[in-house]
Image 1 (cartoon, rainbow, N blue to C red):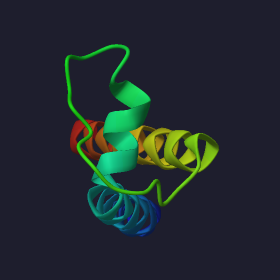
Image 2 (cartoon, rainbow, N blue to C red):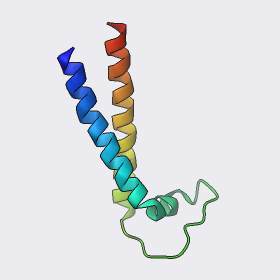
Image 3 (cartoon, one colour):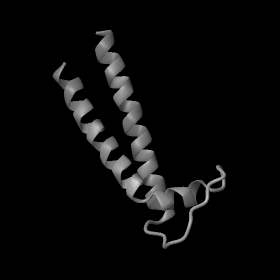
Amino acid sequence: MIEAQVLLLVFSTLSVLSAAWLVLHARDVVLLLRYLLPLDPGQGQRLASFKAVSAAITIFAFSLTVEVLVFLRAAAG
């Protein structure tokens, strides 16, 4: 049981930090997704590279997935 709590703590922290980073670099996220979604990035400079934005999205998605899996496994007993 304690292992699940530690895993939830670690991956929750990772997902919150990566989500905050993505919000702070929202224009860069829009620049990355403009080919998939009809979004307008607006004016301004790019603050992060495409690799950094892709890494942050990957970390966020992986952390969120692991959180859900750990929660479901802990709830199942």
